[in-house]
Image (tube, rainbow, N blue to C red):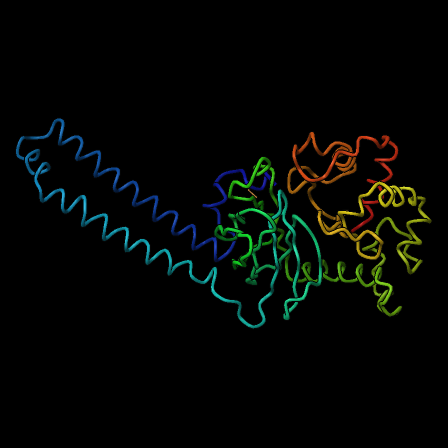
Length: 347
Ligand code: CUA
């Protein structure tokens, strides 16, 4: 996450889509104007100290104050305000009919991500990662579950507050595939600095493949789904699971991973985390249905692999003090690993 935010040029000046392009134009205009005004101030300072007597008198006159102190800033700032608002108006205008929608809720200190259909119903639950197709505007419905957060993925758009009890809109769009780091940009408590996410822009075909894999998994674990849909799971997408069985649960048991699953349920993880198709149905924490495929853990702060998963479950309070998940330091290393292995399978 942080790697994606660093580098040169800084993300704000390295737009990867039309909306961020507008913001970049505005940023350069403000920077240029700032340099211009600074030059005038420095010149006036030089005149006041070392300039000829005639210039000094003019600079100290009432006329200079009215022009330089009232008229110039008044006109320039008003023009900038109108231009800036017009330039970025399309980032936040109301949803048009068939636009792709994602609801993102700021929580202390992570992002809940819900992909919506045209009617606004949730179709995919995820966290701390946003997948979008390139060259398509995506409307984000920003909300907050607790305090004010701010959603910011500088390569793809402007910055927008997430306010409790309100829904704000922000459009993002990428014109090239890639991974773009994002952060919470409004101080929201102790771990504000460790509240990040990754936005991943896919080529159209890759995006459809990603979406199909998610949908297939949901279909495969839903007990009420017709058997025909279950068979649509591409074996290649189900790496690590026996592809010949129709139920992932059975294949997990085949692979000897049942203890990780049991430990997850018995240790109380399921009270806060949901994994579609299992009895884990908690809503307080990030949805883990697809956790095995995520780039990061702990809301953008750790790479996602078995070692960090073990560390996070065992001692998340040392990694991100004050976060709402207790450290499970009562579990043994073997037990932590068993849970981590099982979570790796949740793709
Ligand atoms: Cu959430 Cu800062």
